[in-house]
Image (cartoon, rainbow, N blue to C red; front, side):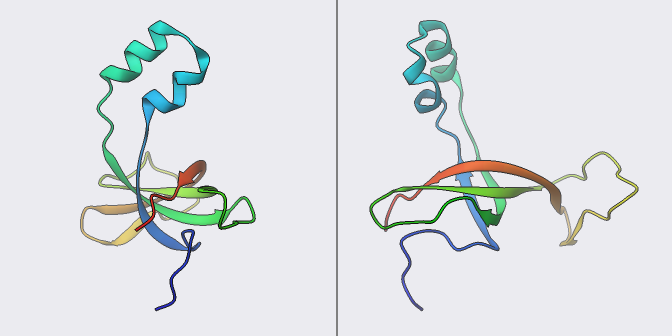
Length: 104
């Protein structure tokens, strides 16, 4: 298997938020205190489409993603959102995340 420096599109991945890192640059002590209280979980996502041209010198990569949930979304008559596994549903609605590679 060839080693890559960024995640490949159309793959599943696990992501986790960094609430403190997301608000630190605002210099807002209230937001920072709230972020420090958060206990982010890991989330399963589908990396749909890369948003940038990846380069080996940049550790950040933006992707459009689909969330993978353990419950069904509210009913949408236009599309079937079930995933072919028990208790696992591929939520088809785009989200954009910034992904930072942590290396090996």
